[in-house]
Length: 255
Image (cartoon, rainbow, N blue to C red):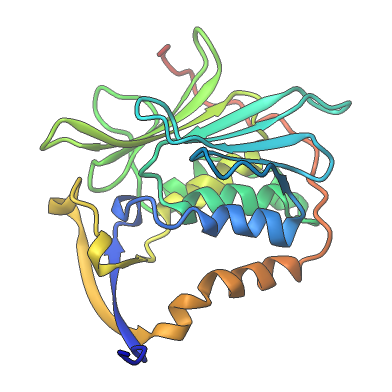
């Protein structure tokens, strides 16, 4: 029997939006074990449905080839309308988790709830691109925009222009609480690289990736999700804050 390796190679990928999807358990295990979200028990289908303890929110992971893989929906409440967000298959789970972690946080400061979704991008040097609205990443690979004509929604598109192919898209309905969108843009603009297994470095966008390899304890990788669950559980009982309307942006074109 081959002894277990004490250390393994791990690749750090920047920019983080090109790191690939990662392990879905980073989100699903955290919601179920740390935040009390329930799930069905159908092992014969490759889908995951998780419902919040109050049954107001539903997360679906549905690997349909031509659709967004991740969908988070919240029902209408006495204090706000229904809303939904979705993410493509290659959206890094760490970026999606920024939204779900914020949604389930038991107590957020008022300054966070009133945040402007564009602000983290501006602070990270994102700019207005010529002939486009919204903001574009410094490398030109990501565009984030708020559409108000013909519908109200927010989009983030990550595009490999060399191959003329979209890497992934994030969609936020116009009624999505702005602090959740801001949590997303903050994670999107974060310059911290994301770790991935060296055998699972994505091909799409590879020309634009900056990678380094590190030798890490195998136990640290094996227990990363367990440590994350414990950290989230220590926050307390999740009580999502009521939705708020985002600050009115500059006029945007229709989609």
